[in-house]
Length: 337
Image (cartoon, one colour):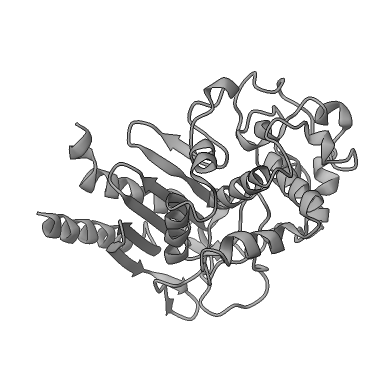
């Protein structure tokens, strides 16, 4: 029965590829076993280089999970507290103090700070600047305002995660990028995960593509040339599953902290988001998505069934999301109806 479903699942993905709706990789584990894997389409259309199971993709906002775990690690080490006001760690050069003193660390983590997002400021006017390092974002963040008082509502805010990166740097006295490399990627043997510069050639890295009418264009021309604490690093489907396994087996956080970051925060007006993780109670699913021009990513842990699912694509959304939904329809829906 399972074998038949797997064959049907793969044929459905291949139909997406044939219809030019998907290019990328899929990697699914169940417990310690590989349940399904596949790679499709081209990492480089120009040179006809196929995607491989270890091809690196821009994972977009899936990287927020790494920032959430990094902050929780500092809480576990008693270097910070979730309820600390962020003015304890972030100066007015980054955010006006009249805002900082009312916003707590947990508000940034749960998207309940009320802050505007930096993407609006980034694309509201032409920018000649290239954004690579944390300092490059300071002029944008220092102009942010609040849409609402903390905890009054929920609004997805990548700016809050960049500020969490500033907090991490000020607490540990090392760069955010070095911290994530040492305490997350290295600990979990995520050997093909890093914060690559988009304009530096890298072997086996997928070029992102988006449609402009009937023409494909690469997403290389953009102001953000390196990922940041809100997302945009590069990883592989296998590495993401390693991260999922490490989380479930408490190799990055204690059981108590793991459960805390992966649980909804009703008290903070965040019933479907923890600290860096989206939560679907109906499917007992935690994870995160990522999207952008030529970027589509979906990572999910199904706690009850034991599946870890990573889908990465170098096409626009909903490329990865369609494959992830196909998995749920093929292997989970019957178990919940």
